[in-house]
Each structure stands twice: as C-alpha cells, then as structure tokens.
Image 1 (spheres, rainbow, N blue to C red):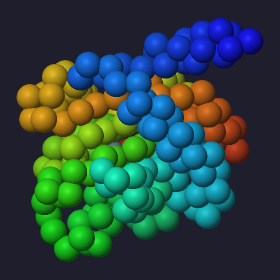
Image 2: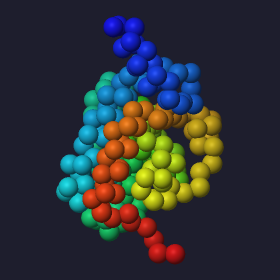
Image 3: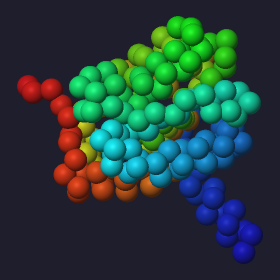
Image 4: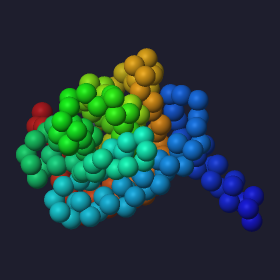
Length: 189
Ligand SMILES: [Zn+2]
C-alpha cells in the first residue's frame, strides 16, 4: 500500500517543472498552499472577483496576503491576482522592494506576461503556480500574452520558479467558471 501511495505521489510531482534543482520539500509545501488557493477559487468568483487567486508567504511559512483577481469588479485591467498580491504585500510592509523579506508568491495559474514583469520588479524571491498558461488559454480563452523564456530569465535574476503544481483542481475550477458563463474579460480588438 505504501509503495502505491509513494508511486502515485511521485507521478503527480513528476509533472512539476522548475528553474532550480528539484526540491521535493518545496513542492510538497507549495502543493498544500496551491490546493487551498484552488479550493478558494469558487468562493471568490461567487463574490464577483477571481477566478485566479494568489498568496504571498514569508520564509517562515506565515501568510502575508491572500487575494483574488479583481479586474471585473474593480474595473482595472492590471488587477490580476499576482499584481493585487504584490500591491497588498508592499502596502502592508510599507516598501516597494520586497527582496529583504524573502517572500514567495503562490498562484493558482501561471503568471501572464504582465505579471511576469510585475513579479520581477517587486523583489519576490520565488514563484509557485498551478495551471500552466497553455491550459488556461485552452479552457477559458483568456490571452496570457507572449512570453520570453521566463524560467531562465528569472533564474538569472535569482528568482526561483516551480510550475504545474497540482493543476487538476485549478483546471476544474476554471472549467466551472466557463460553464457558469462568468466573464472572460478582454480588450476589444
Ligand atoms: Zn497576470
């Protein structure tokens, strides 16, 4: 039985990609947090925000902030979950530079091109995400933007990235968001 459990766990974690030497403890910790955020997705969408949720934790595992995307309910195209989380953390800590705090950002889906920039300027030290952009685009039709090889670019700047962490619950919540006819906000072109 134990062997089966270990095998099934490793098959889940084997899909995880990273820009540093794979650290299972980080993935186990991130899996717990991202699963929690994904389970919160429908709660936020019921309140008019979401469907993406992000949280920032300090290096001792304390939650600093947790917020959802608020593009539609606050009429601001910048208000992705990651951007909202960074803004809330910087306001809370009263600094534009989060680097000395050694913070990690956890988010239900891969950051878009705007959020990659936002994370880079914020001083965040590590990023952990659930559903990859390609899957988000396929399920929802959201445009995630054109992205450089951001894993390597982040590595050059000392920012750790782990992706594809427990994406299943996030995928299900995104499918539900679409099925419920919730807004896929986009600029007109
Ligand atoms: Zn974004």
